[in-house]
Image (cartoon, rainbow, N blue to C red; front, side):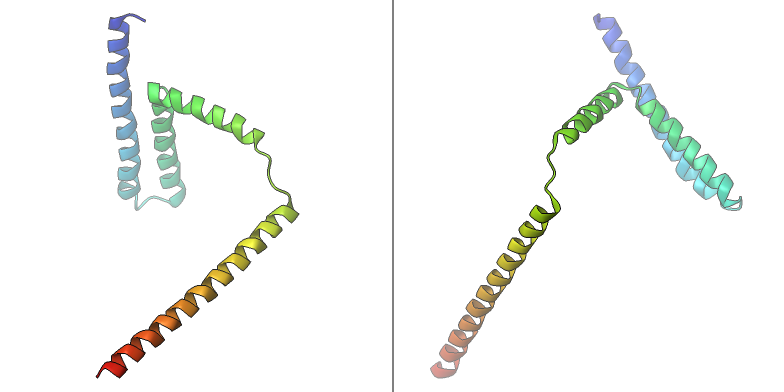
Length: 125
């Protein structure tokens, strides 16, 4: 791609983003302007404007990169080995026991500090 083609692509990207934001802003305005229309008409107009905005956004360089990223993420998500139900229950129980033990430990430390501070403040006067 030559320098001129890259510059024109960048300027078209700016124009595409402007049209995208105008379409999304139009959806917000349509929601307010069509307040007296039926809900079906409002939703249809808003969905159409949002769809146009996203369709135009997907034609930009960042939109194309986002599509590629989503496809790669889907491929990686397929590679994940999910834990079995038994593993999930065991892990949850370990976490629950750890939380209870830490809570008891913090409670005992707190009560010890309260006792120590009350002993020092009452004895000192």
